[in-house]
Length: 262
Image (cartoon, rainbow, N blue to C red; front, side):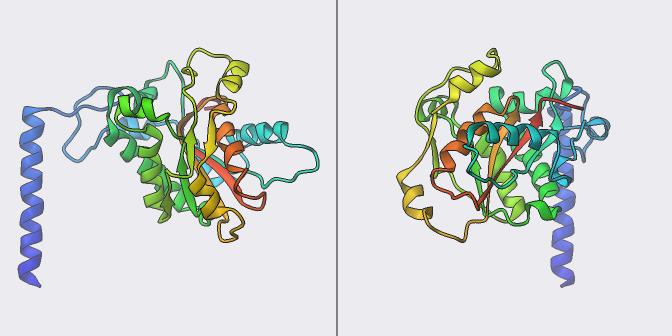
């Protein structure tokens, strides 16, 4: 036992020495403020971490993000249908001119998947600590069209979803939902244009229908994306998934950023 403890200690010291040398040769900087990171800091400095505008929505079944998403649901279902109140949570408040926008931007536009995994795990750990999310059976990322994913090389929502699923100890599935058409970027569209742009953009796969239709063991499905703006994309995914999952299955959403409040 003592021998293995000594080996483990030596490995830790060696890793720290290697990291120190690498930091001298290739200094790591904070993704938010650009300042040089200390040896034990990863991706974000302690100061920016302390100042991160966290939503704390993972603790609340009802919050502004959830209310906004549930309003979209109610506007799209007939009065005779009933829906579980969808939970919704984001890690931090997102502002287009704010410094924390670099977190999803680095993931989405600069190929920094480590950032997505790091902050996805951060959100996942917070969700896992709350009973609201304890019954999540499936985590489903918002899919990219196959051509766009081929060009980018990855799906940013899948990176985040994988980290969240791991933290929740549940399954991530990328073969249930697919994007059936390439849509315009949502960045410069207004609310109505965003909704029209993604209307009918998603559909469930044949495998999803064969695997889950009529099953009763699925209680809670979580859709994951990078940023919640108007909720149009997540609502389009919700609509597609509801064709397979009956109303007694709660379908909730989680993102890194939420546009609104803070």
